[in-house]
Image (cartoon, rainbow, N blue to C red; front, top):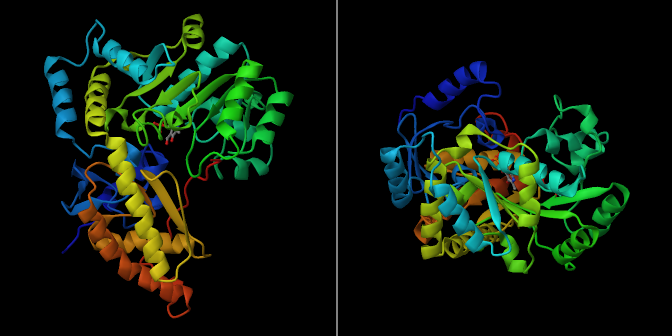
Length: 438
Ligand SMILES: Cc1ncc(COP(=O)(O)O)c(C=O)c1O
């Protein structure tokens, strides 16, 4: 099929008038396949995405970076949104959906009493930090994970020298973040309780914020010990569930470990692609929101909460977290089996519904790029990670693995010196992504 590469042409234009080319690092074409990634979509439905040349692609990759666990353009969610548009999205008065949604979120989180909303995960995190700082009367925070782009978070990269690059997210410069925020945010490694304890004892910590689980699970009662430490020292414990929420339980992944935080943030999949994020928390902490100023015009629009109410209803009815965990497990097993059959060494990590793998090879980034390049030729959006949705079925996995088999064969030939890895790619190697602490 003749391709016009319309997406890359538009991206070239974009880079000249939008710094970085777009608004989200993880969706930059360079993260997948420099100069060849379709870059833009014209339409998306279920797990299908149509690019600007109207080529139909099957999304076996990041599904809008984890926003759409019910598939793109879910009919029921879209209907609720269209009804909201019909009735009016904005007015001088507030929308009742924000109260209905708050009640629902408190029902899902019986340990919590109050809710605030935002429209992005970074915002929800910044709100939680402001409230928790106001409630604790302390500035300093211990963190573990990724919590958005805001000053408070990035300031962690002011603390030390190069060592923090490896400790947080390599290559992220805190340029533009005031240096006097230095030594207010202290990263700790997942499962390293002693490191956290040391940070808490030396730095007058008022808040611990963490992702409950990302690439691997808690060991040695880690989460309970963190909870006990926070309780003992009167520290506000915040779980950032922006990504993990609604993927393993009907709510936070922390439910699996019988531990409750003082605050939690939900985002991403809560509105199945529509912008809505929430901060839920105990009254004793959340009421501190009234002692500071947290307020924004578009946090009052109606589409976000309408989409969330509809999405939560469907998730609960379909137990979507079970379906996506099951398909994610099959994906993980498929990767392992295929690698084994080709004698390739891979490491699979992440919760099943949001999973990733890498080749244990010095050529891992070349192989990753090669997979994206070849799978694209076969009609798939694919990389080495997978965000599952309820529209992903076993038949899609079968087609995906059938396509991947031939690609792994070439990779195995490279590993065995039969092919040269330098000959695999039609263009440059992809950029590497976030490295996380957890
Ligand atoms: C755990 C976590 N917190 C916060 C964020 C930031 O959310 P957003 O990109 O919507 O600002 C992310 C995004 O990936 C995340 O995974």
